[in-house]
Every structure is written in structure tokens, then in C-alpha cells.
Image (cartoon, rainbow, N blue to C red):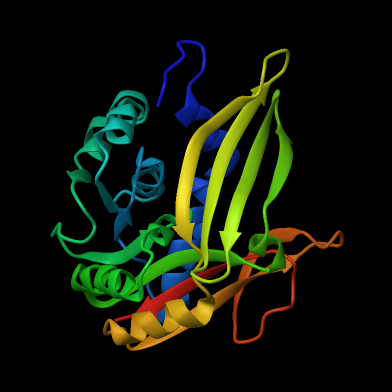
Length: 263
């Protein structure tokens, strides 16, 4: 990725895509709902700049976090920009592992998460199952694997969504979709006021997995039960960020959900 001294792609990604506080709240509340207590050890797979790990540690004095990431670039960014914002005692409760989610064996966690659809990079059922099995091995008894997913008819054709965030525009660009193998190509673009649109700042070559496929593969990987948490909508029909456990979703043109696997 080409760098511009005046443009920080990870900072704009954080502002546009990530919500560590909401993520940590959902993880903690879901574990409490299913297990009756609060989790302490979080493992963030595909952690990137490990912003969620940092938030998790800030959230509780006994919380520990493990960040697992193959690419050293975002890890180094997090070390430079996020790690210094943690107090010395908080930094001691963070462990970063540079390695593959398919082979690394970090300490056991109460919860393993793979958010922002990162595991969609696995394009075969075999590889998805391999990842879920490895995630399960990394969980303590009673642990949870939590992933997110998206879909709907809007995800089945090329389209571009534009959102204004502060003083810039964020673009989520779906370039293609192949119904034969369910593979799709996406780009993230940014445009700051008075500047040209910055094309293809981030690119994702994914398979769009359906909820039944994800749940069935989790069971095949050894999880005992799975749950879907479906997002509610506001009066305008858009997602409201409130996710409830259910077995019946609405026929929305675009939807986001969490899938939880129980050990």
C-alpha cells in the first residue's frame, strides 16, 4: 500500500469501519447471557491494528487480550499509535502474536472473535472448517467463538455505498459477485474535502458465506451449539446496532448478523 504523509489509511478505516466499544460491549453481554458471568480473556483473530484488544483491556482491570495477526504492517501501526495510549499495567495484559490463525497456538481464551468479516478470505468449506477447528482449540471450556457476517440481495450484485463521516466520504465498493462460487471483490475508497477520491485504499477478495453454511461448519468443527444475533432496524429501515438472538430474520435487502459458536 502506498503511503501519503498527510493521509493515514488506518486512521480513516478506524473512523469509518470500526467500533471497538460496541464490539466489546456485545462480546461481554453475549457471554454473560449464555454463560452467566463476564469473560476476562479475549482473543482477536485477524486483529490488524488490535484496536479491539486495546478497548477490551481498558474495559476491565482484570481483562486480558491476545491479538493474532499475520501481517506485520498493521501490528506495527498499532504498536506506534494505540499501544502508547495504554497505561503500563494495561500493556502488560496485552499479548500480540504475529502468525496465522490456522497454525498459531496462543494462550487459551474465554472468547475468540473474528470481526469485520475477516474470515471471509477462506473460500472453501475445508479451509473454513480448519479455521473454526483451530479457533475452538484456542478456547477454554465453555468458551465462545463470535464472528460476524453480512448478506442480502444488495450483496449479490456490484454496487457502491457512499457515506459522509466528519469531513470526508467513505465508499464501500462491491466490484463483482460470482453466483457460481459466491466470491466477491470489494474496495474501500476515501475522499477528503477538496481532494481527489483515493481509490482502492483497502481491497477484499472474499467468499460471501451464508448463515446456514457458517453454522453448519461450526458444528462440523466441534462446536456444540450455534446462535444468530440479528440486527434490528430503525424507523427508516436501517440497522440500529441492536442485535438480538433469534431464529427468524427479516427479508432485508442488506443485513448484518453475529454468529456465536459454543464449546
